[in-house]
Image (cartoon, rainbow, N blue to C red; front, side):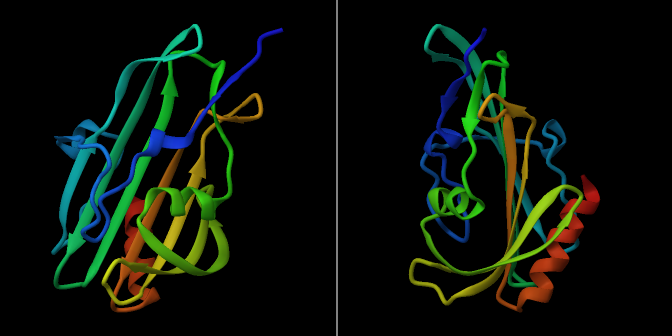
Length: 183
């Protein structure tokens, strides 16, 4: 019987949201080189690759494929962050499954309050949440997450997204829907 090996989600990676600093500098890539897509008038879109090749986990060597998308619109006063993180090279290595709230609070240097679950969309869990980044006013956001295939007691990957707008939750939902429609 094979036993799975659990590793921490995203190895401590923090997305650069609303001026936050990334814990690890990724390589800027064309978004067409990733599976993350987003185009909308007035948005500046940047994609990065944080992939870690030949990661040793016990006696196994894996690749952790991590890609992110950041879109920002000054005129819309809104932004979208998405991270896609999957383990390649071994079905015996997995991420420990944690709560959605835990996934976001570990990745962002921000205060999350008022989590309110909403209906799923295309397999994505959706939550309305208020977020306060350092020295900023609170912003209304929509957090969304899709878990990858189950592996032993965990998962083989995940996609996390955060859509926020200082113009309210309606704009946050609109941006999230635009992203999900372009996948």
